Length: 201
Image 1 (cartoon, rainbow, N blue to C red):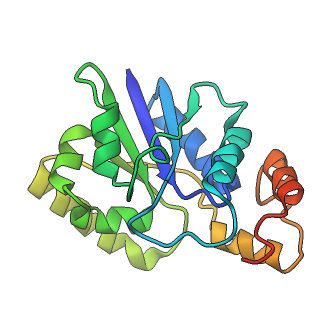
Image 2 (image 1 turned 90 degrees about the vertical axis):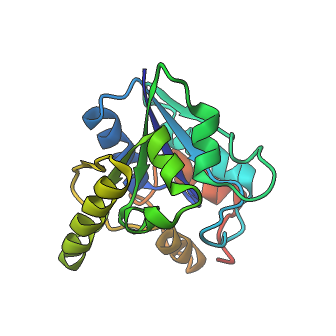
């Protein structure tokens, strides 16, 4: 089985996340894709007023029509901070191949993550560019070469038209009382309105 892992805060999940998930599944020939909203993330503070349950439900709504996608609360059930290496250990099986999707900022810092060597042993890292900043091209190439030399694995790339959109932007749009139509899946837009989320973001 070829199993993908796509983690994130997803507060809220938006059309860029969905597009990245589709490209990941198609280009890595995945049988299953786990979408895993973080519990307590070690990398950044959670902002806005969406609860863990809200973020999980928004992911379920966003991916409900995508075959092979499993939205998991695996990290939310874990006590303390969520580390990628722990999630990989939980999902690892010698008969399967794990593919871990990350964005540009993550691929540039992957070598400093907790037990980064173990991460490379457990999975095949994959990155996607969600921005079109050419100034980062050389940095990414250099980092991937460094990882290959240090860990003996090539970091693969999923190619897709960049969607330069962030959850923080969407939270700000909601807080300003403006519409997020077209920025998030329709069901997620309806959920944000129903629950009155991010009005204090």
